[in-house]
Image 1 (tube, rainbow, N blue to C red):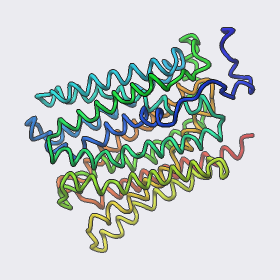
Image 2 (cartoon, rainbow, N blue to C red; image 1 turned 90 degrees about the vertical axis):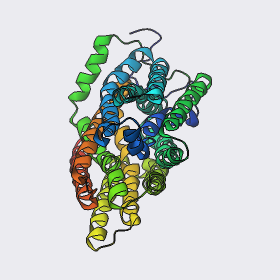
Image 3 (cartoon, helix red, strand yellow; image 1 turned 180 degrees about the vertical axis):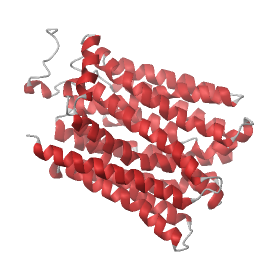
Image 4 (cartoon, rainbow, N blue to C red; image 1 turned 90 degrees about the horizontal axis):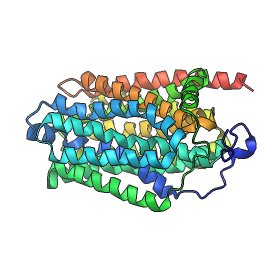
Length: 408
């Protein structure tokens, strides 16, 4: 082992003593990717008309972005463990800016989708902001810090659809991507002044990085936490994939009104993350994960009940989705911290594999949700699918709880 590299097996080295990045820096890095997911969604019908492409083709701009994000996270984690967090974050954001420029000037659906796939480089900020939190805090404290970080990050999906919808109506959809690009540039500039290197274990051989993945894949608890994270967040991604069709076709909402109603979901997520930041250290990670998935499961059941009773107001769709966001705010930071803490010396690899699993499940869920709502944009089938994904998350959580009680 390099004499300058701490020994990850020594508990003394679990304490980070170097300069720490400001929370705002981590929030901005982490927020680029969710902004890119949510901000253009209200503009998809306009993009389809402008590029003379079917709506289903433009909708691939969401699913392809998610699939590419999932795949990249498998490489981002080990590369950051090898070379450090800083260079990988900056490389990813540089790719995002290039992809954004391609989207701005795209004259066909092909170029637009190509730009969206290149934009997925923003995954580096999302993955490594979590790894940096685990770099600088011990396990229980990391859950609290991650809760606060993700609470701040939740402002992005909270305001993204609303801002994107307003921009689309006042100007055009291309300006949405201009704003995205400017946000990424601002994040890079802030990081250059405020992001120290936090990876104390970098420089390990490539074989050791591969071994990190192998060791993670042999940990049943890791896959249980990843399953909790993936299927809990699948409800949110399902709503992102199918919600615009329900809003536009079934409820006849404009893009800007859809974006404003979407704030309910993101606000619930923000509140859940705030409570995680306050109470996870006191209540424990696994207990808050269970409470979160139960709350998430309740949301779509309420929507099904309300629409079955003939209450077809937009609030009957969006208010219960706030519970889905609230439950995710409990579940996701705690599941991420629990999974990454299983192997602190490979936090980047663990964060990448966890993120790939979560986003991969979310990408599949968003595609299925788009099929489930149909051309009529039916809310009850969409809610039923969200309930199914949430129930699967409950099963994973219960198994994880049982296993942690048996493990010293």
